[in-house]
Length: 494
Image (tube, rainbow, N blue to C red):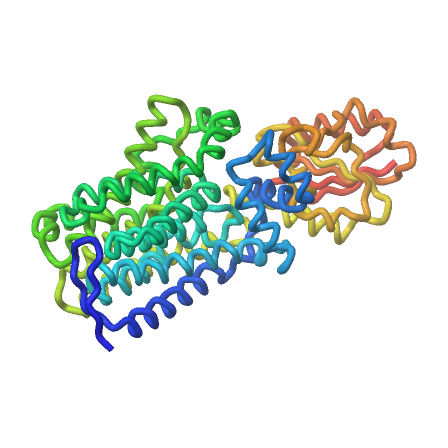
């Protein structure tokens, strides 16, 4: 059956059955691409924070987020339910994000088909599935992939509400935007995207009043998390210490992660699109182009402006939910050629250009520039005896601290005694336990004959020499040493 669908100003003729089949296939392909190899990389510090949160009881979790990470409380709650069913292995915890990528890709096919052709929609879904940002957030136990899925589907809801003018769809729009904001705070920026899109699309302006009421209601519903985010803004103060606002982080990282090759190819295509802008604006892809251009640019401009005026707020990963817009723009650019062989050749080039980054994202040390937390845990689990002591460095750059291995893989250390432990992280208001310094642990060593010490860096560094001297003074001497990717594991015996 062929139906005529009118959404936000464009007329598209398509078979709902074909569209749904295409959406399901593209979504499944995107899911498989993202989930493949997701169990290989070791957890890193951000994912460790997720794990520590979801291991808490519900009462402990809600008490903890009153002081820290309230903006992630909804995501932690979802993942807590997820790991309760599937466990907390790398594959299990990251599979929720891979599933969200699949949902976003399927939704993108539905969304773009409603505005232009099924051909462009399928190409957009395929491009989205292979973009380096997509394949990165698809193996991350954080909320970025979910925010992208929400952004896609809430935009579909907007277009349906604009077409039907049914208050129930506007109510659903309000609820979805608010829920998305609780899952990932910056998802609220999709409201700015929709506002600009409705202003640009002359046929959609007549629903602007209804949209304003629904959007205002969504903001009111999300007000608690917006207020708390301001109260807990110190948790992103670390952004001020890093070069997070650069040409690279603005024009490449949000959609292309670390791939300069994909970024270069994509920007060549986008520049061609810019030169043909006037023709596209009034053509059959006009509405999809206006939506995608708004979706790509508005959150970026708003976030950079806020970062400049208010303080550190920008991070390329926070714009992950704009990756679908980039996919739509590239799909429109690729289909400027009427020849199918040219279109699929361009897609093939993009896939090949993305392949090195995709493979590197799924290596054992892919996270955080070489996280070796699983390597540390595996070595201790294989070599430590029942009752051995462990001392994992808990100083230095927070993302590089070897003690994170204990938080990421606690069962690997279950037979050992944590000689530095003082109090759990729930009492510190951070994701780090309260620990004793080297000068304070001697009283904990009376019963021990062997201690495994893990320090960041390599043999011969100042940190290792300092720890050597400290344990020598307490009657322990190093008898073996093992270098992991970026840490040293040393066995001390009495």
